[in-house]
Every structure is written in structure tokens, then in C-alpha cells.
Image (cartoon, rainbow, N blue to C red; front, side, top):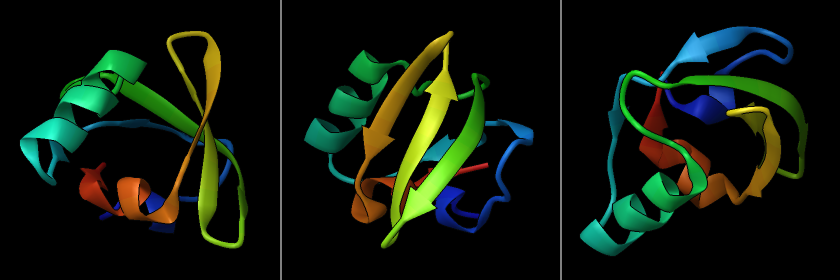
Length: 69
């Protein structure tokens, strides 16, 4: 399921990252890698704040839809 549908407060494993090569590289630079753990902290108007590698990162709805957990 895409990250936008994940519940808050649950640690999930990243299974796949889609999108263009540029978007995948940007997400990788932020710490979103296959096999990594991500926790949704909150959502607002589709945008998502997540905890990844002990950091909080805000990503757009479009980017969150490309991350499968």
C-alpha cells in the first residue's frame, strides 16, 4: 500500500519506491530506501510527516504515493 494510506504511529518497512529516477534519487537522499523503516507521524491535506532514521521529514502527497510499504 502507498505511504499515504498508512496509519500513524506504526513502524513500516519500505517495500518499493516508484517515480522518476530523479524522484527516487531525491527520496534516497532523504533516507527512503527499500528495506528501511518509516513511521507516519501525521498527515495534513495529503502531505505526510514521517520519522525516518531518527529524523522528521515532510513529503508531499505525490511523493508519499510513490513509496510502497
